[in-house]
Amino acid sequence: MANKKELTKGLFKENPTFVLLLGLCPTLGVTTMVSNAIGMGFSVLFVLTLSNIMISLLRNVIPDDVRIPSYIVIISSFVTIIEMLLHAFVPSLYTALGVYLPLIVVNCIILGRAEAFANKNTVGDSAYDGIGMGLGFTIALLLIALIREVLGSGTITLFPLGEWSGVIHIPLIEANPIRVITLAPGALLVMGCIIAFNNYRDNKKASNAKRENK
Amino acid sequence: MSIIAILITYIFISNFILVQFLGMCPFIGVSKNSESALGMGMAVTFVTSIASVVTWAVYTLLLAPFGLEYLRTVAFILVIAALVQVVELVIRKISPPLYKALGIYLPLITTNCAVLGIAIINIDQDYGCLQSFFAGLAAGLGFTLAIVLMSNIREKLDLAPVRKSFKGVPIAFISACLMALAFMAFDKSLLTNLHLV
Image 1 (cartoon, rainbow over the protein chains, first blue to last red):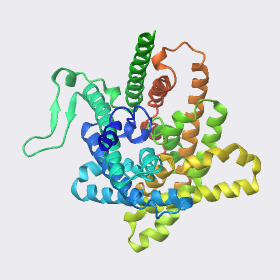
Image 2 (spheres, rainbow over the protein chains, first blue to last red):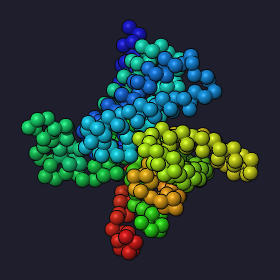
Image 3 (tube, rainbow over the protein chains, first blue to last red):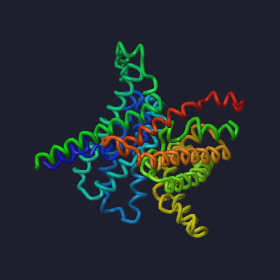
Image 4 (cartoon, helix red, strand yellow):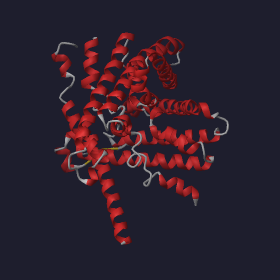
């Protein structure tokens, strides 16, 4: 099924963060807490899917010469919508994401998908592509945030639900956290290690394939 | 905040790349040799300084009087995109050597987080016109400092024995991590100690 392929390729094989190295600013900036990562991930998912649909709908209307400015206007309109929604319904998240929320406009993933995919493909495929890439981005953020929050402060912060405060405490690490992981250098360290691990896996796969060919 | 305090804040204390992670893509992408890193840094400094003033003017003179603050994201990105085009045209006309040095980097800057970032930070911090200009200048200088240092490290790294999995981007991230650790030495108490706050 073609649609399924559009959906799953963003998750692992063409993961926007780890493989294509796009949209690094929010990836490193907001991953100090798991809840921020989830908020950021879903905001990008929302903007990416809707802008992909919109651009794909308008792909025969927008003249080629002014396509990039038109895409930017469409994307920034959706970013303004999500900004206002978060401000109204989840103000704590709005404050936590701060400057990174309006910066979704210049996230290379969104403009990249518009240019590389949505302006050539049908509305359905573009929507699946947007959802897939958005989920891939969310998973990447979630992974980095999990590593950083667990090692750096020994907690996992989710959203408060009724009685529950939304914070999972991890017993041993919470007493002696590695504070630096939640600070700026930790983000770069974790990112470097994850990309190196990815490379290691690819190299291993490549050498295995070579051995089999012999 | 005084102008010196703003300069110190955005060059060192909240350095755009190593502390706030704004403008990571060019930082990793264009830091392979020091010449292009310097070109990129200068182009970014140029645009952030001008864009800070222009976006400040757009916000205070156009959006705020009509209660249209919520349009700032849309307005700023359009202003920045147009500004980059204008800057490109003007530089090409008046200074071909400068255009040769910065030309290829200018189109990339529209989607650089650093430019939109400083525009929004200026508004959030309630800076005036002059303060915005110096914040933009300092943010650009901080970016240049980080990217030039990084490119020098990466030129040396090419000759160093690095494990295969860490070659290229991963080791660049680890080096950036060490630089960020060093930049942690600058914090808000610096301003207090220098009697600037």
